[in-house]
Length: 215
Image (cartoon, one colour):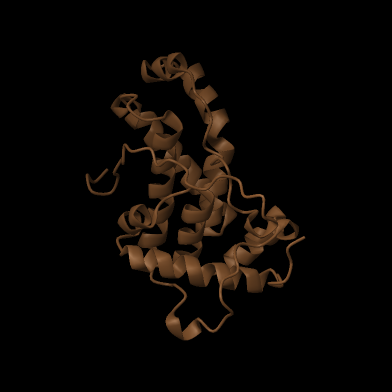
């Protein structure tokens, strides 16, 4: 594969969003779905070529990788392709893992790279919420618990431009900083901040969430 196509950012991004007791911030997850403890012995066995160990890792992370890919790409078939590509990259690059960061953070970065690479190849990352479209009320926070239904949330996310959807999920659900998102998307921190603000307002509107709801 081309050297510039696949980059492993061996850096664990600590989650900055503890669970909020306020219902309008229900989508800020306390832990990424990737935050799964993996014994060093299991990783070592997988690195040595043990098929059973690799299959155990696959089963542990199959759902988190697919969910992240679905939220970013907005399509189940594409999410399945990202899952397959991510696990292939994991298999081939396991020897590169040195244990200087949590295994789950290292694997999550592979999945994020693969999902964004797919959007970039399709030239979909150019689609974002622009200033001209930003005629929604001031952001009052994330949708309340009533909007946390996964299917409803997915439909709303699919209605957002690809870049906006990606920024929202990476920031709110995975805990990436604006600076880290800017690096991943080859943009600026200001771009990330604007898409989080505009995207959150648009998401609330798509979910028909009234700003007065705080139950």
